Figure 1 (cartoon, rainbow, N blue to C red):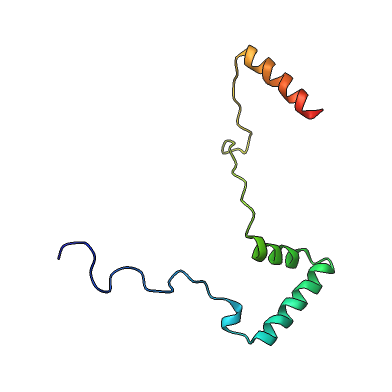
Figure 2 (figure 1 turned 135 degrees about the vertical axis):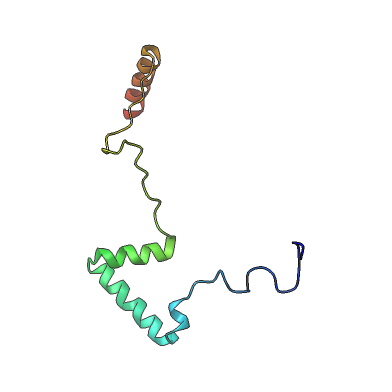
Length: 95
């Protein structure tokens, strides 16, 4: 059989949807869970605060280590004139 469009091919509908808590718990219990989570976060529970913020705004991007295997920072050798200009620029923006 040749490739191309055919009946039943491709991803099934709903294959991209993630299960939500509301799929398993009633609306009343969901609201109570949210209320408790907010109380814990406001009381200083940092793990709960992070969980809430990640659900509201998405996870923060992860840092990428550009260093060597020894976790040393990457070193870039610049020509002296470029280094001087860069140093002046960095001093200017720090003010």
